[in-house]
Amino acid sequence: CASLSSMVNAPKTLRTFCKSATCKSHQVFKVTQYKAGKASLVAQGKRRYDSKQQGFGGQTKPVFHKKAKTTKKITLRLTCTACKTVRLKPIKRAKHFEICDKKPKGKQTY
Image (cartoon, rainbow, N blue to C red; front, side, top):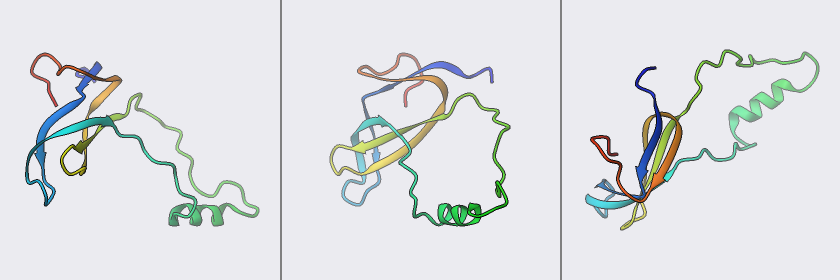
C-alpha cells in the first residue's frame, strides 16, 4: 500500500465527544494503545478446540500459514477523564507508533 505511513504520532490527551449517560458532551480523553487481553482457557471455542484435539488423529482444525500483512491496525484506547468511560478508536496501519506530548503537525490529527 502506497499510503502506508512509516510513523504515526498520537497526542497523550484528546478532546472529543463522550457518549456516556453522565457526560453527553465534549471531554478530555487520555490516549493509550489498546492491547488484546490474555486468551481464556474457559472460552467456548477453546474448550471445543481442546476436546476435538485430544486423542489420536493429529491436527483437526486448519492452521493458517498464508500470512500476507506485515502490520496490524493501531487501536487507540480513549479514557474519559470525567467519567472514566473507555472508547476504542481504530486508526491506520503503521510499523511504528508513538504517543507524544504535542499534537502532530499538519492535517492528520486524531
